[in-house]
Amino acid sequence: MATECRNLSSEMVRNMQLALDLAWSSLSSEQQAQSSKTLLAERIVDAAESGERSPARLLMLALMHTIDP
View 1 (tube, helix red, strand yellow):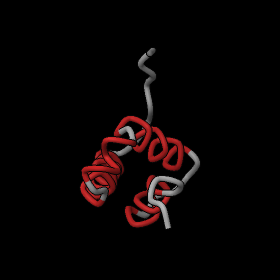
View 2 (cartoon, helix red, strand yellow):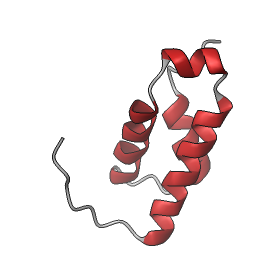
View 3 (cartoon, one colour):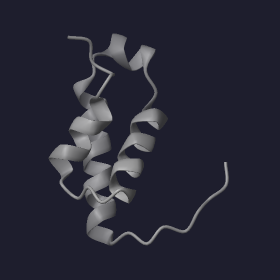
View 4 (cartoon, one colour):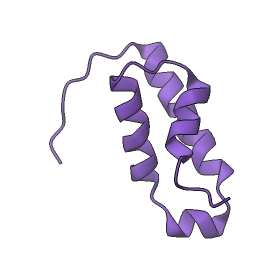
């Protein structure tokens, strides 16, 4: 995978890391085994690059389609 230069503030990077950590820890061990932390991170990056700045929304978007109702 190629590394791209992204112009994100240090605050935004912290928000993204927080969202990823919270998303991953909110999954049960069974859900973690069936999911991918990389996929969660990609969802967060995509949302941030689309303009989302709220850590709560980044978290929600990362978990979409991950947790079964």
